[in-house]
Amino acid sequence: MHGLTVEGSVRVEDLAPRGMITLRGDLSDATVSDALARAAGLAVPDRRGIAVEGEKRLAWMSPDEALLILPRARLAATLAGLTETLASSHALAADMSDARALLRLTGEDAALREVLARLAPVDMATFATGEIRRTRLAQVACAFWMPAPGTVEVICFRSVARYAFDLLAQAAASPRIS
Image (cartoon, rainbow, N blue to C red; front, top):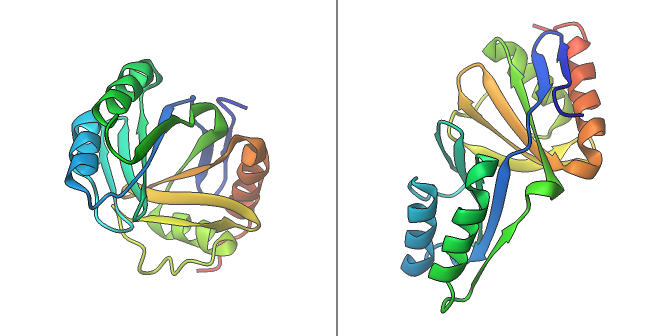
């Protein structure tokens, strides 16, 4: 599916595989959060937040879970470093790269928000850049965020990525309401 793109009221595209590390541990523990921040090169975000810099993303997923997305070439070294640093902590870093897919929507802000509002039970009028939401697109578990105005990124399980892509493409192809 990599490279698949559809144009509608917004552009929907499947992105190249990224490195994805899930870190489970108490994010309020300084040892855990400091190790994660050093590995990511980003500050650990607050509740429902995501830090974005270039190709890196560090997302708060729950009080005991963070998701680090980074270039695939940096995955092995980053995972090894986290595992070593957290060896004496109650934490687990796991490679989730092959389990998840990353989709990107680009276009006019109002159109992006309308496409997502058709599929997800999220108040898109108040959804802000730098915020992440774990939710559903129709019946597909996902998370999405706005790394910049005019852009939304969606992560879902790879096993349902084509279905999620098709949902987004169909929502983008439907006539605009506003």
